[in-house]
Image (tube, rainbow, N blue to C red; front, side, top):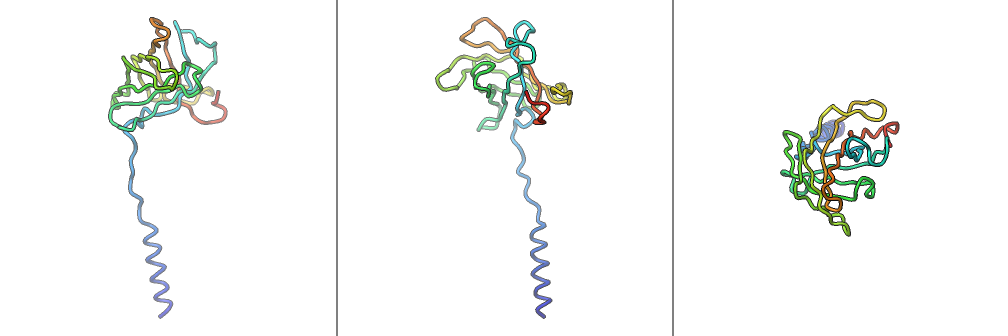
Length: 162
């Protein structure tokens, strides 16, 4: 009889442990959120020299509705900014025509136009196919100069790091 009770308890525990975890889903911005290796270009030339890439990050906002954060996470290597941009999650586009950076002590205007994420169009340092990012940016402390920020998704493979 003890074997039957023991077997029954084991069976119940096994069945309970097999229950499926609920699908928690993702954020609205998950197709656009990433870490990117990007170049700051002016008239097609990398401002910091060929092969100079900096990490930028795109991420969801707390509202998780129609915006993303775009930030230069390398202590201002490209430019010191963190700005919220309106996003179209279906078209994978974004813009911030009147954006203001929220970097403490360096609150500057950051206009972003023509922003887009292009799935499968980028290539990492070693040639792996990745997503690509592109945007035109104007900073209020350099008015009238339109920079291009473009790059590819970070693969996190050691050989693809800059």
